[in-house]
Image (cartoon, rainbow, N blue to C red):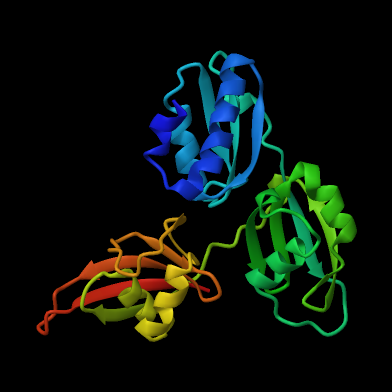
Length: 260
């Protein structure tokens, strides 16, 4: 079964495919209740694909709020209702504890959390506000994070663990712009979206630092489509909102939204 599944995914995704298979097999064959760490959308897709082939399991995804990007999976034997299992997600509320305040962003909070020596997998979505951040985290790690997170980018902070009902949702903001491109090649659209030359942007793509829809894409000539989400480590992330064209000059008019 594993070899049959491997052909549908990239070689670098095989370790996660193996983990997903193990979760599903434990729920189906050993009647176990499995609650995973937070999964990105690509991992969620892989797990759904594998669980969908097994009639003896039921599964749900929960990220703590309806439009969550990162979610935990609850996998149970088919005779049980996954809705009855707590996904174990809480809110780590972080806010400046006094003194001069510096505007902090998503990267500041994520960097401070990861600097405590934890895995990215125990952190869900971050809801950043001007006065602080509500971080969705696994209940298992909340106490450790609360005890050890004392500053974010040199700003002293105080923390509290709150129930999900206290979450203050911040919808992602997009900086919308319209570009014209000769084609929907990854390197061409990304160079315009990030305002970097095509020659300079090709290198990090080939180095495996680019993801399209949360899947690694190392081919600069890969074709994008409307709705695709592109992230490039060190540069940011954007979404193709609309594709129009061609213009009189034969170029495509592409509306992109850069996450800010």
